[in-house]
Image (tube, rainbow, N blue to C red; front, side, top):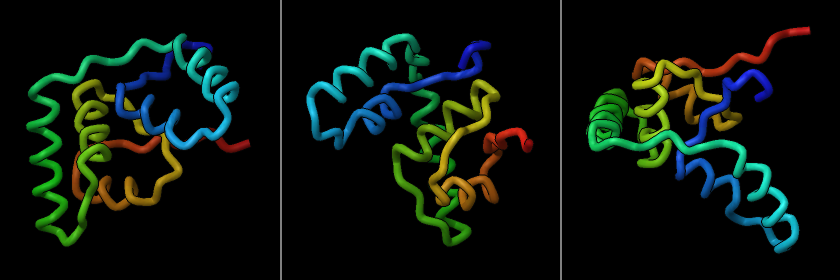
Length: 105
């Protein structure tokens, strides 16, 4: 994050903030996330996400719309995706996205 390699889109911001029970925790996290501008989502990203969905589906992998939108924006910008969600490992077998691999110690 310190060297400016973190990017966010609105749906990621929404997912990160969703489900926080205490208002003060929500406010604190929202304030920290405010340091990151959202990458604009273009019409082409939605179209790419649909194409990725169709490609995954053709290989028996059902993807979520928001997940594949994340893949589409990451693909357009050439950014790896940082996630602990195992679904992204399945997507990356069929669509040209890279998953962030933390450095080993």
